Amino acid sequence: GENVEQHPSTLSVQEGDSAVIKCTYSDSASNYFPWYKQELGKRPQLIIDIRSNVGEKKDQRIAVTLNKTAKHFSLHITETQPEDSAVYFCAAGPNDYKLSFGAGTTVTVRA
Amino acid sequence: NAGVTQTPKFQVLKTGQSMTLQCAQDMNHNSMYWYRQDPGMGLRLIYYSASEGTTDKGEVPNGYNVSRLNKREFSLRLESAAPSQTSVYFCASSATGLGETQYFGPGTRLLVL
Image 1 (cartoon, chains in turn yellow, blue):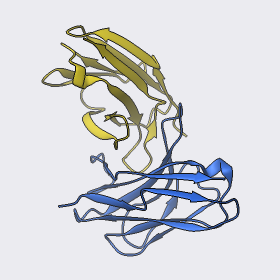
Image 2 (cartoon, one colour):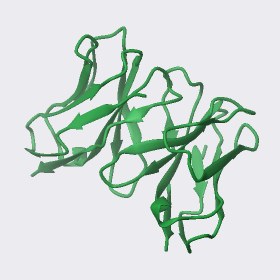
Image 3 (cartoon, one colour):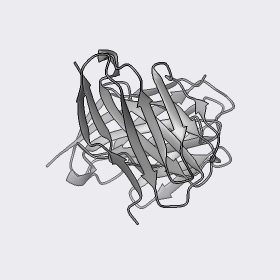
């Protein structure tokens, strides 16, 4: 099955700086790569996703890049704000039925 | 729209007891999922239902059973709870299974003593 590794496990950034989270996956059949944000005690919520026919996608301060050859994808958050503090999960899968999630990155934005 | 709802929010069980976690969605989604979330391990798929009338095993199905009662409802049953099943359980749904956004419920926190 798919194996997703996520780094770093914790990330502390100064407000206004950028944050980068990286994930690698093992199954070359994976073609869907979503990112979820989970605030403390809340449910995971999709923030951005990318499919294998696209190399990069942006949504305001958030961007995701995908390198299918190297089997890795990354989340970039620019101009971080206190409300960006949360746990972020990457996931990968051949379709939506069997997503495999990374272990998560706890992001803390220091004021 | 309530989205995805789960009951109960919190439950304490003794080893060997059984219980059913309930999940319902009002978005007319075809696909539904059950995950467990443990510290440092992300979300792991227990079972999923691609469409009404079908269910399939995920990554960690042992000790669980599911029922897709109708298009709206997908329940998860623990027949004989074990301490290793202490976790937070999330139900999710998506319109179809083809790279669509999964919407999560608020979770059920389960403690097995």
